Picture 1 (cartoon, rainbow over the protein chains, first blue to last red):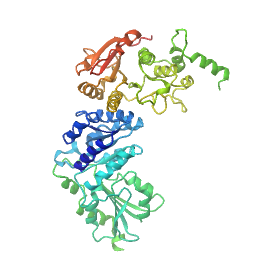
Picture 2 (cartoon, each protein chain N blue to C red):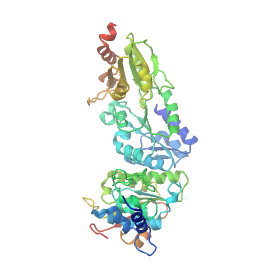
Picture 3 (cartoon, each protein chain N blue to C red):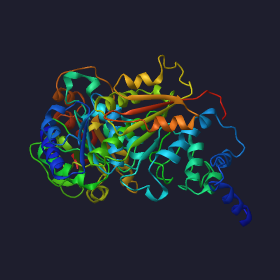
Picture 4 (cartoon, chains in turn orange, blue):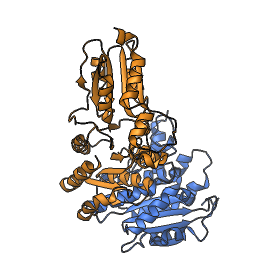
Length: 298
Length: 244
């Protein structure tokens, strides 16, 4: 996904003279040729994330369209007040693109984990959040986002599904279990594990790579009384959205995602998925516990 | 409810006088409205007046022009003098000064750029203006707008915030020549700046001038003293507690 981001951003810098890129050393080498061609619009501020977002705010105030990029914890958590004040409070907008996700670089440990990033954007107003599930989804999302002129966060990951879904901002039904079935919404790279987990269960699976704004109309059209969320970031991040969307209906919600507890373990991203119950076996356990006996017996 | 006669008198008082009287003082009194101002209000007054009267190439008619000079108030609590100067120069109606911070007021204790014409940034949380100024200066340069300058006003205590030092080091390293920082130094930083505020900038490649923050001619000379290929800082030294 990072390579797709680099290629598309490099192309946008050449195509659209309003586009600017602000970096804090992370990925700077990958943009070396773009920096050579556009020295005034490819700006590496060094390891200075507060400045990175502040500079983006200033660029936007002069009319440019900044793309800001770093590791998720440094981009979102370290510079949170700059996002709140140097962008939102100034009525300035930018496209923030992270890599690393919840625990992509698992061997680096907690300092490089950012499971709370999407929840942090939920504390702000009007941010679009894209969580692509496949490298093939990145370029289209980035181009549309840069053209849109509003603030957006793209969360790139090394985890991905087998195939891309090009147009999955609104919920796309990937597996239809028929009327009355439970609805599972898989966000971004969680889709394949979710599909494996539901196997023979009466569960409809819908996919989205745009958790914000969440496709509320699609959810209301598809949801029965059981809803399951599977998100690759903090568990429950979208629970409030689902609860609000279905406030007028009796329903049960199971919100799966990354746990809050610091595990203090390294290993691989796959290990962390398993430890957080987000591998197919873990999802299956949670699903059957949630659905039994109602749906399974039925 | 004000009578028409009262409003007319207020507007007449507020209009910038032609007889050499200080045009800001009566407006500042309207903002003050009987309250006690902290020293920070008076410490920034002369700098703000020199900037708007003699330096900045921006008028109420050009607040949205791409090639205007930018003034960013980073120490957003120093609003009283700022609002008074904006009123004196016609950016905002003097009547606005009579209600600072009320439920229907556009003038808060910290300024909001979306509410006040001519205000370039919303500020209040310290340590945000210089980064925004660096971005603005880079944005102008990237668009070939080489004439306008970006001015940003900070305080010596505000320099405690580490974000400033990210911006100082970077602006110096890339030679951001269209940027001027003004640091009003009223010795309010808790641990001070041994060796002087200016050294924090010059060691990173800025050019610096340190002047009396109440000497308007000295401020003017310093604020026009930028040159070449480096960012510029003017340290305006004032005595804390001084009320003039």
